[in-house]
Length: 190
Ligand code: UP5
Ligand code: MG
Image (cartoon, rainbow, N blue to C red; front, side, top):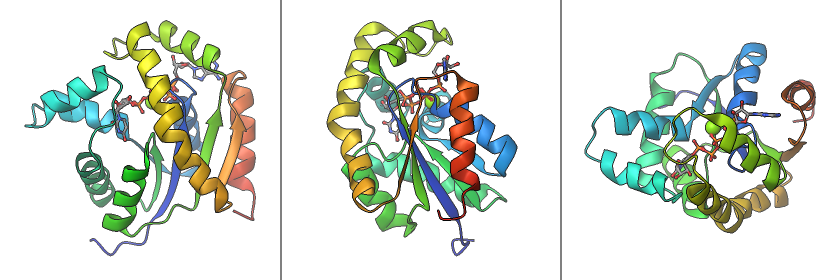
């Protein structure tokens, strides 16, 4: 039902910082359900929804889809799940996203896992990914980096000022990054 008590961790970091990779490991070890906002939006395009073309165009330009759309997808995914622990990956991406999620769901995140990675490393990873994503070309990648710096980092700063951010050095090999992630999820004073 709507009244289900849930635990949410926001997983933030630049494009290619390793959010999806690390979330898969967290799922295996800590019993969370992984909800990638980007994956939900890409599934919405594929499903042929009336918003599909708008979403596709925004992703191609590295722009942030209106909160109304993304919050609904996240809320539906949480309601349809039997779990009550969620990793929300790649959301909120701007102040509007953050405020809308809070207003609609009344959920406050337990903490924010922030993957801090140098831009040249992220660029290298994205150009090597080769999974046919429309936005993994150098023009769109540059736009994604710009939006991340201008719109998404301020959200990290907001949670930082509330003492909610757990920052991870994400420029290392995935297994080493996960050692630091594990320490966050096993520490008692979250
Ligand atoms: N890789 C991962 N970790 C590595 C490591 N430690 N060392 C070496 N390589 C590593 O990783 C990227 C690549 O790097 C992979 O090939 C991986 O094997 C390798 P991944 O784990 O996929 O990184 P991730 O941070 O998830 O990168 P992603 O590209 O998914 O991040 P974005 O934030 O750009 O993408 P997302 O899907 O979240 O959003 C895409 C677009 O959707 C946005 O630009 C926006 O237009 C739209 N969107 C919204 O509008 N609103 C939302 O709320 C969400 C998305
Ligand atoms: Mg991802």
